[in-house]
Image (cartoon, rainbow, N blue to C red; front, side, top):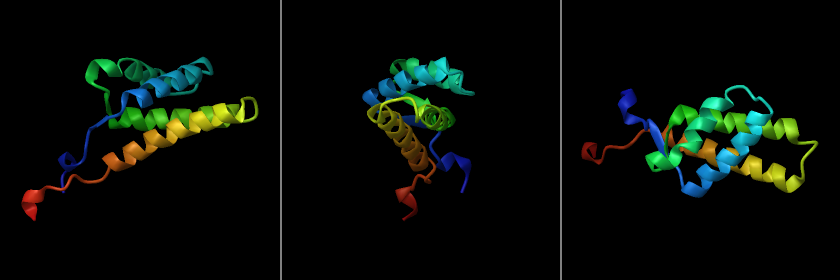
Length: 107
């Protein structure tokens, strides 16, 4: 199986991208490593029909989990839950993208 059988981009729903961008802005204010590229990509996602490279989505999920960890003691539980929820949605999308694309012609 070649690497071409895996997705290289993920198309996310607009609300997920917008919510992720909001949380990534918070991560940028806290100077979390690796967030700048993710934030730029998520801000521009509407220009590409919300299709983002898999590594960017994966990095964004990691940044949001770091943000959740760093702010767990200082934010409301609902805000923490929202950050974690977006991070998990991004992580799940990445895991789905890592599944090989089945070619029905082989069956």
